[in-house]
Length: 175
Image (cartoon, rainbow, N blue to C red):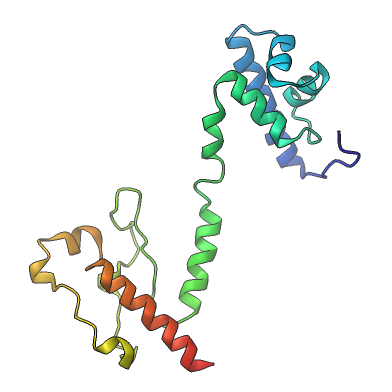
């Protein structure tokens, strides 16, 4: 076991304790003893006891081993999946690099989020056309899109590539 234990904020410590409690309840629901789970997870019973109390000194691997014994290891995929703060920070960096909003802003269903502009609504008049991309074929027009432009908020994958290429070449010129 590690000699130093990470110092956690009280709210984070409480989250870890609740997680340990949920693992203990999952063990009880399966009618498994602490000894059985500890043996199957390859750890000492004392480690399992610390884990179920939400000990910060217990390794992530030990938590995952217990989850595997309980059959809930796939729940680990849910951790950090949403990352709303990280996505907002990333979006802020994207908008800070130019005049054009270059983000999809689509929900999981593929529809624009409420109150958000779609790429079809972005004003591109402030951007000068790049000679390198001016020779590329124009994206499919709205008339020929069959309504999916309005439905999904963008014209084509190529139009998104063109926006990104324009952003990159603008930054290279500005250096």
